[in-house]
Length: 323
Ligand code: TXA
Ligand code: MG
Image (cartoon, rainbow, N blue to C red):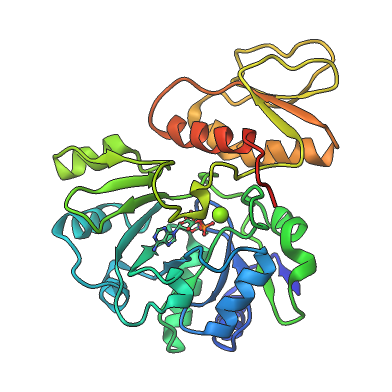
């Protein structure tokens, strides 16, 4: 495995070729780093599961270069979904749609629908375009972490998470820290009324405004369609406790206006919600790097992107059935 830091056109070509040959390429997106494979190659996609240690029934998001590719992977696309795709792609939004024949069971976890996203990140888009020039149709890319762990927002974190599981022909592309820092909003578009399954930077307010109607939210209940929807997920090694002040020797993440108790390690002091999302996962990782056993997190109180932060942190605090 090679980590490439200077991403030139030649590097993009090399990475696209590696993917076409069935290798894995970890790449930055605006949300978190993805672990990419040719979404039509069953063996390559199978390697994503083994590198992540992820159960096979958890579906993968297919990343495409533009809304024009949507029909290759999905059919019976409702008008509202097309509207959302046109408005928010490229961007931090995944649409769950009825699958076309190209989306095989090894991508969808055997479900009749497929998750699609156009990322808004220069390296990711260049890679997708180059991959399509080589005849590729889409890249399966879950977050580039081991199953149940925190998503990586830097190439170093990708390396720490999965470096030892990658093969010599696999690549990690370094694109500095991800802009947004939490995973995309997932919207189930297979019913008359869209449902948010995972909150993200495209908020329910933004979606309702663009569609001019109410939508529903269902972050935790129901069948487990999305692995990020397991109650316990996004976990560092340290124990995460919510809304309590840190004690001596413990880590603490809170908005900048909340003071650090004496003897605690301040891991992050974001000044606003965007900054909170942006540094959250690295702050949790820092706690692990410092070998802290406990991290106290004061949740932000706002709505919008704060919903995504609350969702992820609540799940990292629930350390049951971890693997
Ligand atoms: O921001 C993101 O979405 C990042 C970047 C790399 O694009 N990707 C990401 O993928 O977070 P992943 O696999 O770590 O999380 C995607 C979630 C998973 O929980 C998966 O089960 C769910 O989306 N998902 C994917 N396809 C689905 C489908 N057809 N139906 C329901 N859930 C689906
Ligand atoms: Mg993930």
